Length: 373
Image (cartoon, rainbow, N blue to C red; front, side, top):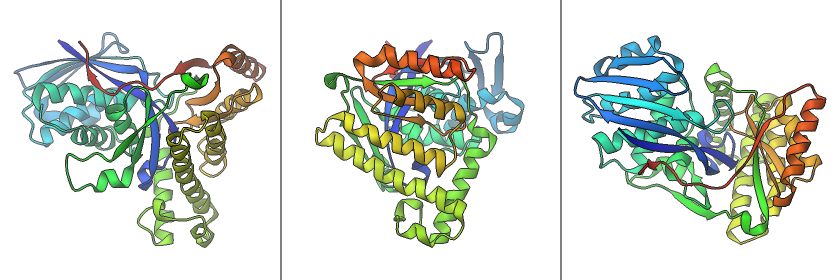
């Protein structure tokens, strides 16, 4: 069987803005999910995972919807992709899928989108080679939303499909979803070369996994929709800080405050990177994003807050939680020669709190989903 890989992602900034028609700025990771795939002629899907040794899931192509609630939760992501291909009329005669993932699960690095996107590009090459990048993103998103039951926006799938090495992906989500041309993808590749500036972006996986299917993510999304409705705008992307004073519900005001200010932070970071400003300057935006996610959106955790504090105490230019929240990872922008000191700082602070040290690793912008040769 041939193999395909799709990367996880780190969202530099723009958390919980995608489903509010806003702006995002992710990079792809070198860590990814590999899908080995081969066609079958018996109209069945045979699914295995290296992370689930001995577990085999077999479902008839024509019976995917009926079997959804009978398969393990992890299997709903790849099976959801097959289901989307079938629903869209692509001639899937059957397929064998073997999954092997290197993106930490529950770390806020989009392991589920990487899984869906790896299967999506594999099925495209096997059964529907004319599919556009936009169609791939829509299929992977629909699989996660409708079959796996996680109401994510378009950020994760776009990053996994569209990102390029050495760049961050600036995506205007409204422009992407509203584009009349089915082949159009409204995105800009922003140069992001930290090495040239002597900087490193660290990820600290706290080891406290999140689960976006548990309802808290959907609750935040519903609250944002309620805030937009109360303001009489299509989405919170259209609200201003002045508008926020009209929200009488303090909870909805806090949720909307995060989205409005986070969109502004994305645009500010993009402008700084476009103009060649010293990347150290964007550190303050990272930290401000975390404070907003912590206080206004209330998706941080004590372990995430501890990791941010540890990074800042040992000289990071900025740090924030990354991903949907309720667990996962923190990113921090540091001088390259401070890496060992920062890692030691994480270990010391976590040990003092009776917690295991986070898994810390450096990341650089990698390329999006592709076939392995």
